[in-house]
Image (cartoon, rainbow, N blue to C red; front, side):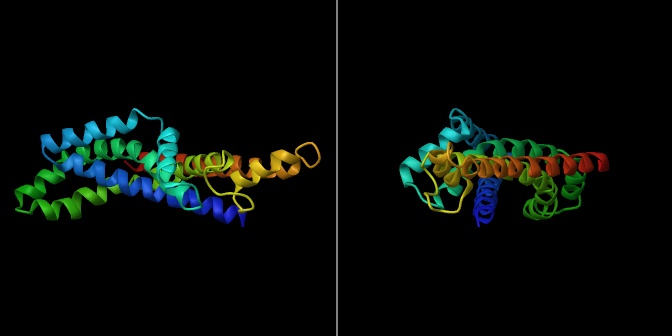
Length: 203
């Protein structure tokens, strides 16, 4: 059950971060100069706070719990996704096939949803796999600090925090959650790197 809760937190946080980052990044990439500049300034303000600190601010405003860390970590990772997706959107928008679609009389709305968005979201699979491991570590860190899931919740960070009190008598109570957090962070990263190499090879 600890595995299930921690993975669910990581997946939920990654999904929230991608959705928020996607809305900001894609909107900035296809908008006019004024709106693009406004969104970029907003993202830069968020970047002024380290991601984990931004998550702590969200938790301080909304309180602790099992769901809160996913939302907090998602918001903390959103600026990074927004910046990457804006860059990807600008590259796709400048591609020749977008100009061809305009020359053929396609509406901007049609081009956005049928040409730009599908090509922009393709790298999201790589971003998602890379982000899940990071989200699990962040969510576990918040729980370890007592700002996420609380003992006796079956979440690795909470289990690690509870096990440190017995580390002299039963070291494995703290060791195994720590090992699983490390493996959960490494595995999606390795998969993400492999997917990234596959996508780069196809280009």
